[in-house]
Structures are given as C-alpha cells and as structure tokens.
Image 1 (tube, one colour):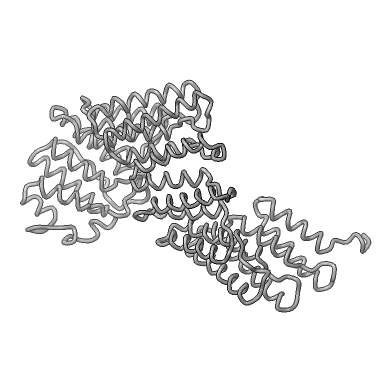
Image 2: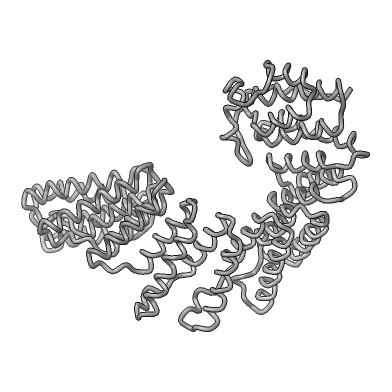
Length: 530
C-alpha cells in the first residue's frame, strides 16, 4: 500500500463507531483493543492519533455493553482522556463522554451505582461552572443520572431522582419524555408510603406542561402503567382503576393521546391490584376487567388479549376473597383458560401460579372433600402438565387440609402429613414458616391428646431447626396446646414471646420467601399416624 492508502484517525474512528453500535458480544473489548493499537501507532505516525471521537466510541461500547465492570472501564478511559488533555492532545472529554459514563453506571446494577452516576454529573457541573463549556450537562446527562436512581431501588432514591429534576430545571436544561419516565419510575418502584400518589402528581404535572404546548412531553404509556402498578403495589386498587379509566377516556377523546390506550400490562396490573384487596366485590370487578379485555380482543385489539397472567390474577382475586363460592368462580375461569388454550390462543396455558391460586380458592371454599380435590389438582399439574410445584403450591394443599370439614379431618391429616414429608425430603424446595403454621393447624383440628402432642413436638423440632418459628405460630401453639406441653416445647414456664427463646429458632423467619430454595439443615424424619 502507498502512504495515501494507509488508514488514518478517521478510518480507525469509523471502525470504532461500528463496533460501538454493533451490540455484539465482546464489542467493548474489541473497541478498546483497537484504541490501544491507535495509541501505539500514534507514537510513530502523525496520521493516527486517538482523539475525543475515538475515546467516546470506546466508552460508548462499554457503556452499552451491560458487561460486569463496564462502568469502571469507562471511567478508566475517562482518566486516560483527562491525562492526554492535560498534555495538549485532542482527546479532551466532553458532554458526550461524561453522559455515556453516567449511563454506564445507571445500567450497571452495582451497589452505589446511582451515587457514582451523580458524582460524574456533579463533576460536569463543576467543570462547566469553571468555564469549560464543552462539558455542560444536557438533557441526556441529567436523564441518565435520574435513571440511575430509578434503577437503584435504594432508600431515598425517588427523592434524589426528583431533586435532580429540580436541578435540571434550575440549570435551564429542558427535561424530555425520557426524563419524566425515569422520575415517575423511581417513585413507582420506591414502595414508600405515598409514593404512588407522588408518581401520579409528577404525571399530572407532565400532562399540564403538554397542554401548555410542550408536545414533546406527552406522557408515554410506560409512565401511566408505572403509576397504575405503583397504586397496585400500595393496595390502592380504586386509584389504579380510576387511572385506568382515565387512560381509556383520554385515548378515545384526544387523538394526540391515542398512544396511551391501556394495554395488556396495564389491565393486568389493575386486576392484580384488585386481587390484593381481598374482598368479594374486588374479585367480581377483576372479572369485569377480564371480560372487557376479551371483548376488546374480539374486536381486533391484539395488544389487550388476555393471557395466563390475566386469568391467574383473576382466579387469585377469587381465592383471596375467601368467599364460600370462590372456588366455583375460580374453576369456571380455569376451565375457560383451558378452552382458550385448546383453541390456540397464545400464552393461555395454565401454569404454576394458576394452580396455586385455584388450590387456594378451593381451600377457602365450602367445597366437600377439599383435601382430596387439592391433592388431585396437585397431581394433575405434576403428572398431566409437567409443572413443578413450589412451596406456595404445597402450602395451598396444606391449607385445604386445614380447612376441611370435621368428618374429613382424618383423611385431611393423612394428606397433610404426606405433603409435609415431601416438603422435607425435597432437594429443591424447603418449607416456609407458613408451612409449619398451617400444619400445626391441621394437627389441632384432626388429632387429639397424645397423638396431637407427638405430631406437634416433632414438627416443632423441624421448625426450630430450620429457624422458621414465627410469632404467629408461637401464639397459636400457646393458645391451642395444653399448658404443660407448651412449656415443654419452649423449655420455659410463664408467658413467652419469641424474644425469650433462642434466636436461632427464628433466624430464617424474615428470610423465608414465597418459594424458598437451597440447602437445608433440618431433619427429614417422617411423621406417622398412630
């Protein structure tokens, strides 16, 4: 090749930008290798000298890679740029550089990432105030830092995100739709008291700005759905339902807001919110929303087609209502799911969540032989549909045993002991404190005197060995067991609270999850009827 055909800085920068935009695995490492090669060549050739564009492309590759340690690599490149800039090289960091690094921290998922992102933003503001106009923070810079707090879910993150929005306004930097989505998301995910209402306040403010001519701030459906979900999380089903209705009305009456028509995710969030209400009328309202989704689906709205989440949440609403006829409604919805699945409707196959909700609905119903029916449903999900049960499934079956009629109590106890044994020999599932609490309840209803005490004593040892003794369980045993027996169990006389007992007995109570998995230290001894 002649000198005229030799690659120069522009040539290398084109390659770097191609790698940075490729999204391919290993693109960041490849970009940095090319940058290092440029640095080596620059020692002898004037035509190849990495500049701000070169470094920014490499930093972008790391920032968007999602790889572990990407943010640290980005910052390392920033330090290299700053060093070269001091030496008079054309590699000074600018707004693009700093904004990319803030984004890298925002998506890193690392502890303290939001604070690191804000520290970079603070640096930009300080440099700009000192007279460096090339690093003035812009909408992208502030939005990335706000997004870092939205993703952090740390205590106080929502307040910090909103404070950055205020700083942004004070700096005469206009927020955009992405900025507001991030602030709303930060409040929606904060789970603090009043966070849903605060997220809604910001959404309302965004709408007012839009009405005053800031068309680019038109809220996205993501913002509305985030607020709906926040209300659902706080158990404010009525508020979630009101906002859903507002979305429907606004999208139908104003063409500019056609894009915020509620979709499947929005409707499902409201159904879940109603399920959390645990009231009979909430279940009926949840089913009305489900029927509305079906109607819209039949009219051609594929974006609102119900799925197994929609039906499972509605079944769960009936289960949580604890109404005597809940199982009948839940079973009807379950059969409809299977019918729609057989017809080829996507994502309609009943899953573990569906069966768990159905068995719970059965447990709280006035159904005869509910323990036997619960076991049948358990076998159906395992054998017919190859669905692996979890701790919630077994707890639901135990609950059906606990709430069986008196004349069915002996059979219910036998089934409960089978389930209890399965929970203790499983290599993938372990009991939760609910498992023990429900099992003690079965024992109370179906056994007496010596048999009751033998079963409870063995189960109590398993419970305390697992560190899953809960205050509710302790109170229940104190109320139902004979006083001498209870004193023998806890090794103490007089009034006893959890604080009076060995801390290892309840060490895992707070950590007990809905489907706890992992190694267990508790015994696998079998329980047997006398």
